[in-house]
Length: 251
Length: 333
Ligand SMILES: Nc1ncnc2c1ncn2[C@@H]1O[C@H](COP(=O)(O)OP(=O)(O)O)[C@@H](O)[C@H]1O
Ligand SMILES: [Mg+2]
Image (cartoon, rainbow over all chains, first blue to last red; front, side, top):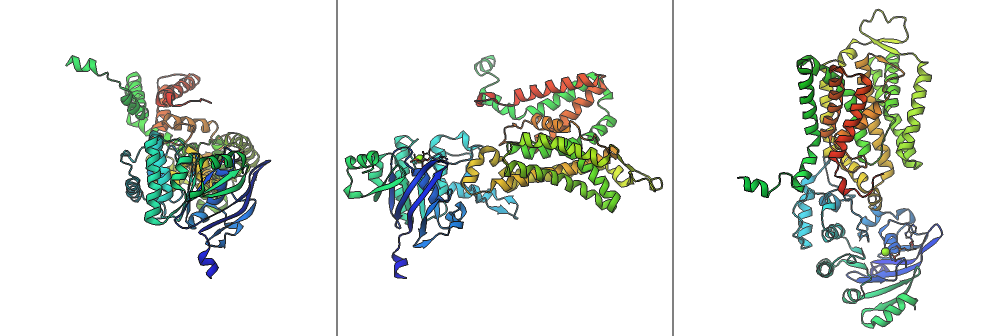
């Protein structure tokens, strides 16, 4: 019992994933504690997004295991819906929004509330969307009946992030959440991560190329190199030098 | 006065954008006014509008079937053959089991749709190719099954006694006439509107047309969903086949030929892009009506059928050219 109580919230052990001949993930291992922000850094094609998709349930790993609070997830349960039920949400690098649908629909994607078993409960969706937008401090989205493709990149990003934090999940994975944003919007996202962690004890996995941002937000930093999570740094032992060296050379 | 009008042009980009939404309504109004002007009372008579109300329902139901599929970004060109197959099985069903046997016609349509959906989703063969093959196969099956002969629906029960290829069903024949056929179409249209605009299933049609990959990523089973879509559309085709049986009074091996194209045209005239993601039941109704009215109006005006087809083709291109905002489309395939 004692062992389970002290086990990390999430443990990823030696996961691998190949696509045809490409070994996208060769050995992914890390763990995540409650209320922690762990950053994953690495060059392009190092396997960061693949690792995120394995944890989110979108990819089933070829081998290796994932444990939640010390309990292994059976192979058959590696699905998005099961990972969501375990409290894991993700904001994908390309946002994964449906462009012709409204903001409320995108927020509720995969969990549309029903009336009489058949109909869309639009009222509930709108109400929740307004709440989430308020929590995100987004005041620019007024018309909730517009398709999301008519919104700005920052607004779309808010909806994608809102989708991950709206359900009180324990773990939120952010895959390069600020890569396409300006400095102001980047600051907003960073503030949000800290707020949500402080208020709800949510843990974050932050994939980022922005080393300054990583040093501001992360408690620990995992370096991936050619599909291997090769090194780990604590917040106070990182210098930009060592980080850049680890990312480029894997040492 | 004149200052303000010159300062603000009548057609601002926003107004043009708004106007596009109304193209199907404007088109149908213009078409009606035009034929009224050309043929006067011969077009604008109760008798002719009763005829139009009888003529539209089969096309309308086929257009509804096509609308569901087109919204997901696929297409079904097998629905004409499926209509003949379904009508035939409906008539056979009535021969075998009496009046309730007509249900077999609806189910046959659903079956063809389900087969389409399975081939497309499970074997990952594009819908155009799959349904083209089914168009050929199903039509051939009808000809084989029927041996080239028709099954007739008759109004008097006496004559059909020994004749295997006719069924006495006066109620069905009266269903094919105004007002019954019109009321039936109105009820189906109402249900279709609620289904397409308000249900989770209806919204998911648009979402699949918008970005199927994203739905898979969030854990929605798009494969089974698409099979359901084709099956649902197929049931609608089956219903259209039964209505056609009532209207034509016979299940013929040639029934429904080229109707798939009419259905696609009606959907497109309703402003629905064939690339998927958007659509409207109300505008599809308008599209189907427009098609029927143009064909009817040209006939009354004495235009030979072949020239009518040319006119319909031109109308289709014009309607799409106006209603689609092509500046927003990067690639035209
Ligand atoms: N679905 C896929 N099919 C084929 N190859 C893929 C797929 N996803 C990722 N890859 C390949 O796996 C490698 C790692 O990709 P990715 O995880 O996206 O890297 P990163 O996010 O670190 O830039 C790349 O070489 C990429 O081309
Ligand atoms: Mg990536």
